[in-house]
Amino acid sequence: MYRLVIHPVALGSGLRLFPVREKPMNLRLVSTPRFEKGTVAHVYQPE
Image (cartoon, rainbow, N blue to C red; front, side):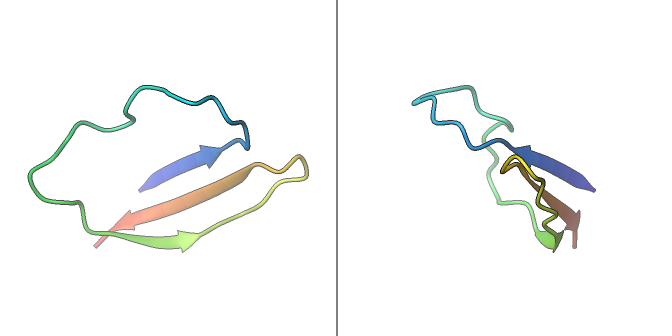
């Protein structure tokens, strides 16, 4: 399971979170809880 927490800040550039892959990962979004300060967590599960 992958949990990505996204903070609404514009930086303009950054590092890759995952390495480049030949084939995309098959992930299913299972939930998107939202927090008071604007942060959102995306929870993905491999298929």
